[in-house]
Picture (cartoon, rainbow, N blue to C red):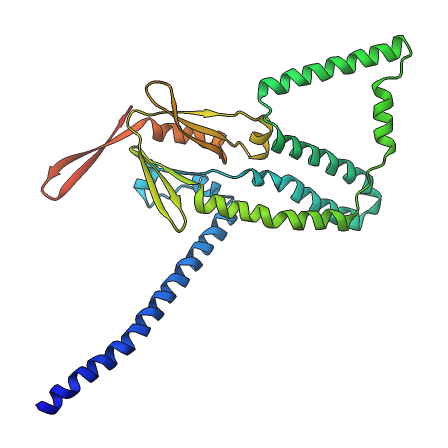
Length: 293
């Protein structure tokens, strides 16, 4: 017994020495698996059209999910997709059909201009109609003066622009698209990891990868959609801003550039007009009652 008592601390120390590396190894494997699962979720999110298919084909096996809707806010880098796609398509066509270099050059110029205007300015529907009307008036006035007074005005500008022949080289278009593709994917990952919002009848949950969750109580809040930039809404595939307003009509929370907001709004509006109340039915059982606000 004395020998056993003397050996017990040594055996315990040896066991602890082996258990600590095993726990560290298990913790490392769990962390690696966690990040692999998150990356897999990101790839699945991309393949399902940034989560759009989950709304088009709702899960019938999860009744509670029908009372929730998940949306994503995207950064402004998302709007680079038009330049990236046009560059890759133009490179393929010009490489196989060199005679289309001028046509794709003009397409690339207009897409580039459209994207720059989208990123640099906020063009609402009213501003678009106003400036569209101004430019139309200027163009009609120029045509009138050219036909009646023989004055050479905007036609000279247009002829000069056409004479520049902005043909596009397939290598240039492909390189620019590849360089822009990486920040675009990075912006998508930022949207997936920090831009997810889950709206339910009682709360709004925001998820931040690596940090945790933030839950907002919906009591006393009303919601409205705003499409402040027409060009962003088009490039963002129906994107817009979602605002939470209190009883004093003050905006207490704003989520900008919510992807597919135009298409999600009908279902989102149904969720936002519900409240859930939990009623005791029997010991250990509850009944959830949905009621319109």
